[in-house]
Image (cartoon, rainbow, N blue to C red; front, side, top):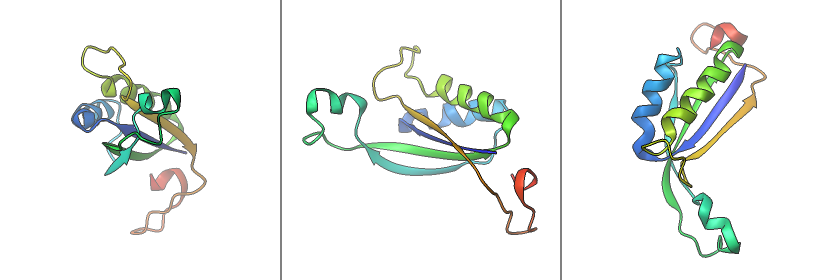
Length: 112
């Protein structure tokens, strides 16, 4: 089990949701966040850079969905034209020790 956390541009959210659905990942938590764009840290300018609105997506997945989920996010989150502009975002994949479904008490992969 893994937790996939993606920080993306807000305007790419719908494309990312669609791409994840196409690979069978439907359960998401989405929140608005603020962050420093990638180019803000070049040349030591981070102290004067302004925070920009971003979106954070989290999804817990079983092993077979990790690589397809990450690939879907990366593909859909890139700026139009697939140029990969600075500030398109980041994806983090973290180990997920335990998941418990509150409603049923199920644990582990079945709870996802």
